[in-house]
Image 1: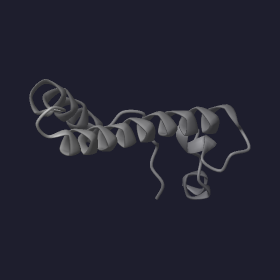
Image 2: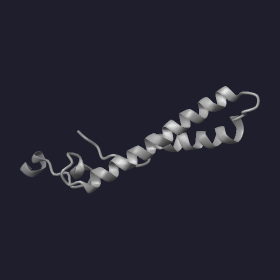
Image 3: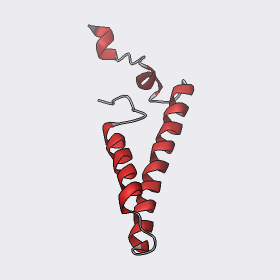
Image 4: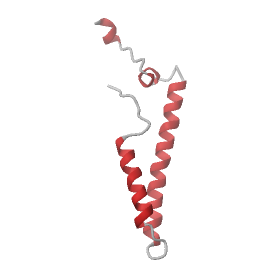
Amino acid sequence: MTRKLKRWTFLDSINAILFIVVVLFFLDFQNNSTMSYILLAVFAFWLITVILRNVMISKVEKDPNHPLHNIQTGKNIDEDQNRK
């Protein structure tokens, strides 16, 4: 069974909180620059995936010919549901 894609998940909320904590308390480019750059790269990757997920969801919702369009827009009508 395919589920509707979410723009923002619980895991994204945890990542956002961790990002704020890291920026406030752990980034130290003078004493530990390598770890600071690694942390920034990890959070940049997460942010890019959130943006790309939202772009993909928007494309699915706008294209009625996309295979996931009915599921994403809430118009999921299966043959099993029609038979009942």
